[in-house]
Image (tube, rainbow, N blue to C red; front, side):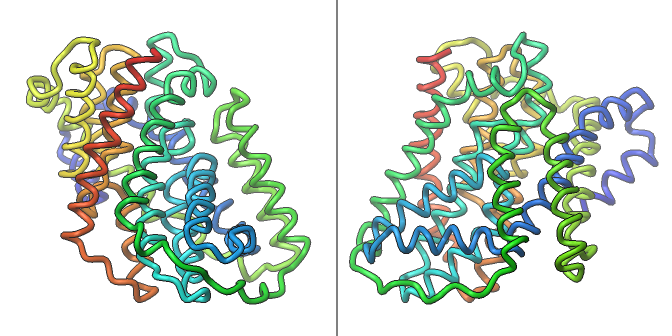
Length: 379
């Protein structure tokens, strides 16, 4: 639907040539990164990297469920920070749920933890979330340069929001995380060349993303390397489905629709909600506006809609706090949550949406103020 709406925006002339050029300039690098990192993540999963990491966590946990859960928290955080929230939602979720089933553990705490981490752990690096990649260019207009400058503003809110999420989840699922489990079954046979190459490529992405290079470049190089190795070792894995074309169409349509709405007065409607100022209350108001908009209309259009109301680097980070940590209530608040819900249903894990929404509301009320306070203390 968003793709069709985007086409209608262009065909009906709601956006002029200059507006379309601006959308293309902002969306191009974001979509290029999205395609490349999706290919990397899919091929790494096919090589067994995520499964091996989950099994390693189970062995380190030594039969203690609560320790395994904390290790899944660490794994989900790492996957989200380096390979983006969609990777955690789409690829790590089925691995974690499969592991929970093999260990005869209640899958619910692990399922909910995975999607919460996909959202709340996505604030640290530009590559962790598409909203961050868009915000990276905007922050340059406020004098913040590159990944290092971005992370210099977001590290404290990232840690505060992540800690809040872990505390809320741990308390909510404390009874389910008691007890022990038996050692995991033997791992399936893997192609050692594909596995080692994929593991090394994923490990090298983290320093590449913080090196100051445009994130799409190392992601593209990594994708080319893995495609070349798979072409030699397992050609059948290289299928059209590796390309996230549906997501590309969706994101492109969202860019066009929100830009058209901005041109025709959306900013004036949101300005009274977002307020102005640089105090804690002002930042929390802006983050709350962004979080509310995300839970109504998805986090990417929410960011595009609220971003013009920022006006400073700190306020822009407040917007990112809202759209990254806020989408915990409604299932459509982020694309990652929708993808995660689909993976849960495919594995036979039932998610009670009213309970999910209530726990998510508690999470938002804890994580967003905590991250906003951390921003205020360190800016």
